Length: 311
Image 1 (cartoon, rainbow, N blue to C red):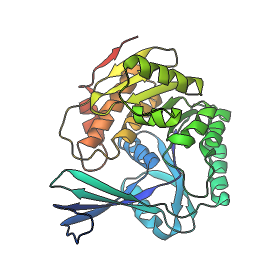
Image 2: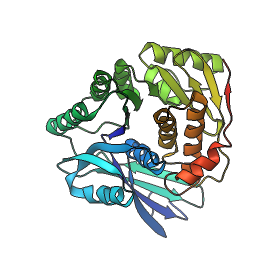
Image 3: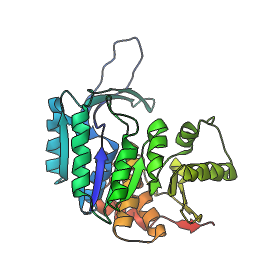
Image 4: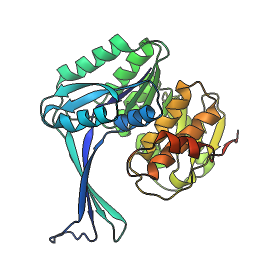
């Protein structure tokens, strides 16, 4: 069984316009709303791949309906805990004429300690030996920034596999729980290690990854965008994975989909190479569609992905 945890979901209100200028009255031609949140995205892609997955986390009572309707539409097993107030709303303004996107991300309501404790109790009661727990995304107001460490420790107590995808101080604390996998890019590694963000050589990046391992990460999947990814394994072997080819439609959620694909490989007890193929294929399938990657697209793209062991 795979569990995903999303502490800080969002409703993404997307506006498409042919021109957008700050300080002026602007007009737009199209708008739509999609549910968001890194863990939710992971669970939907896993569900599309027909894995046994349950999505959990925290939703605001004021606008929970949009999420629950989408879960039902996708037949996604879920167990969310309802907090007073609203789940945050993010505004994304896409200037189609200039291929630019402006984001205004909301903060959402403050989450009570009682709700967090209910979620942790749920994990304690349900996680079993060999399960996979994916915790992903930012932390909402009212929640201590060591919450991922606590969630990871629950997974460890139950002998479940803990995968963490977050950033900055949340990641630093989460690393204390020794997650099986993290998926940063170079910029996020720089934030975690308080380093300047610039071009680094492969050797320098390798040293940075070793630092992350010394802080607790067992395996590091380094996302490189259009350049593919590196996988730094617990046994110090290193793999390089390519990318799928296609027309970029929407990059939102592609990183979450990579986590989902890799997790699916673990769930199926596949080799490291195949886990990386599924990760790259799921990321591509999402990038080439309007929302999140579907099974047939992922399976098709998987055959295109080349993985090389470079150490």
